[in-house]
Image (cartoon, rainbow, N blue to C red; front, side, top):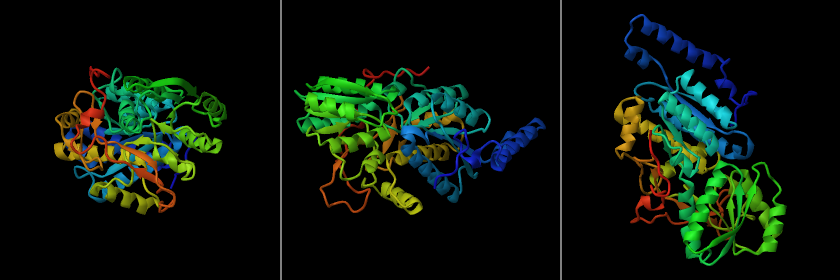
Length: 428
């Protein structure tokens, strides 16, 4: 399933030296020449394919999620091309390994300015997303953020060309925090937090402290954990000595997998939970190690017709169910397809205005979502996950119990999103 990568992290069939990429560029150059000779621009546009630019980390601690992102976007583009493409034109996907923030920015610029991508989709690292968003803004193209949680991206670093399928950190905290409150694990309790030492983790810790404090609890201890850390024993020894009421993970990627495994090995008796989570991390830890209450944007057991169709198609193609990062890519792509189809246009400002006017999108959940006009956050349901009772799992991916949607059927989707007072966004 995974394509071979060149030394720059790009897939070989998308490298600048490849025949496919050369043919794309050659066609673009020929079209530009035709325009200079006086041919109508619309003729040139209709003869070209629509290029979709995709960025996600394929390596490092976020790599396991990135692989699901790549599988999902490939499936989505294949489905659309089989259905006739968009505006009568086929789609070409160029997917890149974003690697790190500087590389992500340079590849985003290349996708837009050299390859002519109509839109950018993807990313998981909040630090990389900031650079991609700035490139998108300069080029006046939409960037659909599929996996970056930092509230700052929706606040002081927001821009009108960035939309957020992924939920904000504060939304994750509120969704999981409500369940922890109901379980008596916040009010009057002392929490011990382990936090990934980069932009996402710092932002998540900040929002966690706000929620816990507002609800009568205290994060009495917090530890910043390097993103390349694999041995959690020093932290677990401190937790054993401290004896907190609740241990909170603000970790990311395969950090979560390693932490859950080692927490189980240490046999610590303190309840565990997390304010950031991806199902692939739990799958990596395994059913025998997984414990606690965790938030998620989506799970393959969500009971909605579109969710079931996506799960069936993904499982048929890849032999396993999609996880929440795969969901993010798929919803982002389907949102873009909907906007282009409804507006009959690739014009960026028309697409932005379409979303800002409150168009509902199918986000593979019981309730449809809508992109909020003032910060472009997708308002949507959230869920919690906990272990299924032993012996109830049907397969190696089926040991997570999906909780009820948050908010409930009658609740406002705005109720778990960052408020303007919490996270003001001002488009420039």
